[in-house]
Image 1 (cartoon, helix red, strand yellow):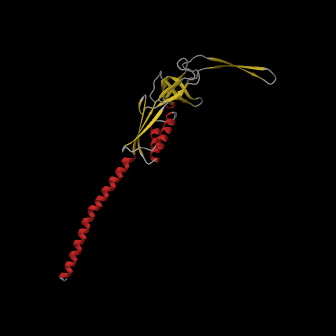
Image 2: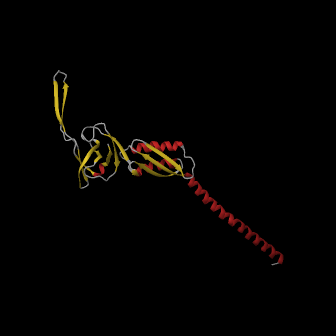
Image 3: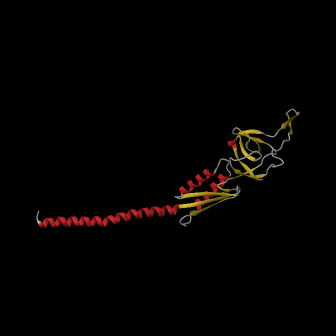
Length: 230
């Protein structure tokens, strides 16, 4: 190999080494920059959602971690959904969190959700209205009450529960046994009801029947919550 050829080869190798040395830091910088951009994007799109409710009035606040104003449309949608969920007998803390996070995702946000009420953090109130006189004199027909959604109750508590025939009922816990709860009406009076019906031939038909308070054994899981405010 001639000295001239050797010089050319050495020169080519040096140039290649220099190019690699120059490009390597640039590649490293590009990776770091990409990671930072990703972190900044996540920071911008992360929000803390605070739901406050007393069972009747529900407010929703969404605070961006980066301080960027969140869309009014998203906030309105969250408030409407939260208000509806609070009044649903089937909702719980997890289901409400899921609904709010789903709305945030639709707007390209990630959300951390906190629910506060008069009962504490992540304690759900449930509003209801008494229908009937079975809990007189404690509760009257048409009276508004607020229950705390919970599976923790004891004998003597007034609870709201699901009944397969009557829907939602308000009764007092009289006994708890073998995974079931005995719900009893406060009103022990038997109501005598008389109805009159005029037949086509002019004869008046009179019917009289007794209306007794509903007492019932129900699975414990049918209890929605304990009435706290009435």
